[in-house]
Image 1 (cartoon, rainbow, N blue to C red):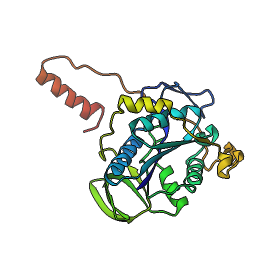
Image 2 (image 1 turned 60 degrees about the vertical axis):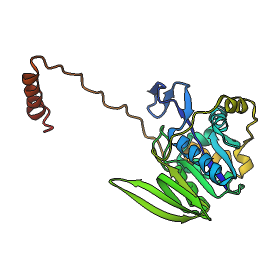
Image 3 (image 1 turned 30 degrees about the vertical axis):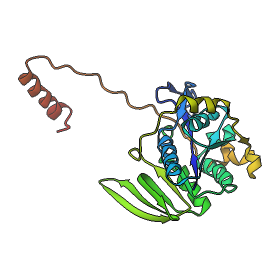
Image 4 (image 1 turned 120 degrees about the vertical axis):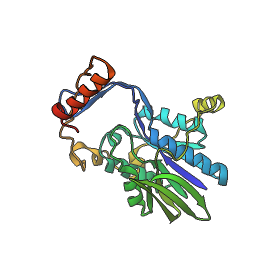
Amino acid sequence: MNIIVLVKQVPDPEALVEIGGSGKDLNIEPKFAVNLFDEFALEEALRIKERHGGKVKVLSLGGPKAVEALRTAIAMGADEAMLIEDEAYAARDGYSTALALFKALEKETFDVVLAGRQAIDADRGEVPQMVAQFLGLPHVGVVVKLDVSDGKAVVESSLEGAKEVVEVALPAVFTAQKGLNEPRVPLITGVMKAMKVQIPKVAVEDLGLTKDMAAPENSKTKIVRYLPPKKRPAVQLIPGEPREAAAEAVRILVDVERVI
């Protein structure tokens, strides 16, 4: 069973983010982590390998620092990793990202492609679906249970207010949802191995792509501007005894805020 996991390095959830002066870019503190949902995908890939044998290869698109995410994957137990090193492609729209990943996947032999349901930086949740479209393979999203055997997979997906169970032939693309598993913490031996391993890198030109395909003017989507989130109103403390304070809180919600 050969499994490929698509991984993205994203800003750490605690990193400071500011809107740039042009309003069309972001200034992000240089603290990074593996995308949360991709960790679920990687853990599931490792569990499939433990049950059925085979290997797990991790693939990422990004700048030089994205190697850190791949080293984390190796530390967790992935067998191989490869970086498509190109910051321009990584910074463009989901189409450019999916196209580069697809070109790399075309050169691989696999039974399963796993990825997170979305990246927590842009939150668009579009790249794995595009990859599946390029590959001409079925895609099942928001997966919370995955059983693979005999050339097929039985998949449970989380829907709003319900769950859906489908059967799909392999190879196929799956996107992991929270609840699929609990990602493991790398052992020190895995961390030491990851520090020493050489991560192969390829350029987009090696995949038959050109730099101008990821130029801003060729992007399928355009960033008009970023808007900061609305500021939360100040906390209002209501003095008095609990009964009187509760009554006053209800009055404010009804008469002032009009939310009840």
